[in-house]
Length: 254
Image (cartoon, rainbow, N blue to C red; front, side, top):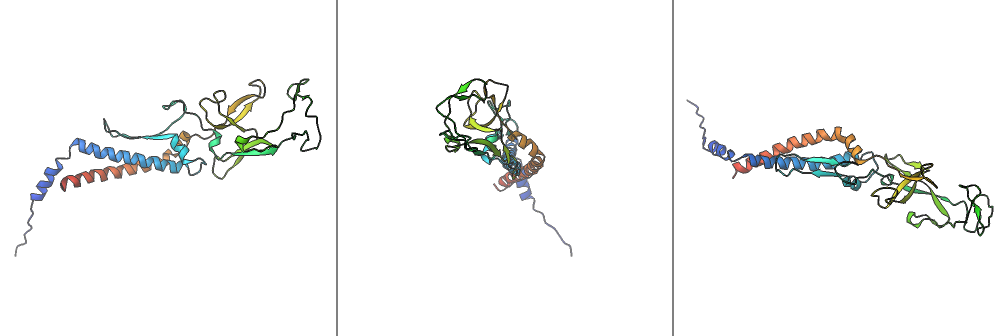
């Protein structure tokens, strides 16, 4: 008794004709969707990796990065970008220490407004001229202590440095640093309160204001790249296959 296998090629022929409708534009659209999806997920994953050990907010990191998606005008290419000073974004500034969980340190003022030394109990006449400690032979009027409302410092207290936590779990005190308003005169393009120090001898009076910076977002991104690139490459490979497969099934199934 003979055994026969019957093959109906009608459906195969129909499928082949359907696949011919997968032109270059259709495949380009599928590739673009795959690239853009992988870039957006890569952007999210990169930030997760960057924030593992650095004490800065995700909102701040996002403000210093961007994803340029493929428009499909020429080739399917997307970019994950971390901006840096002097780069493609105008007026990009270094990362000030204020971004790293900054805390204002305080201390009791040396003198009360009534002229009493808070350490020794000594008294002085606040109505008379006092010796200028920065200019021998000169005098100054007594300056009342008013605190600093914008810094949360009450009357009778003063700034005593700052503490920051750049690396998570490693808080550091900086005794010579202080907060001051960011103006054009002390930091270009600054806004709000920034962390500063003074450089003695570089300016008359108390010294020139110099803003204090630390780990920048673009540096964090560069450090994370060895982990991010393989993840994005794998995601992109899988996404391309899925997008093209979806297009084939759409054409075949009508």
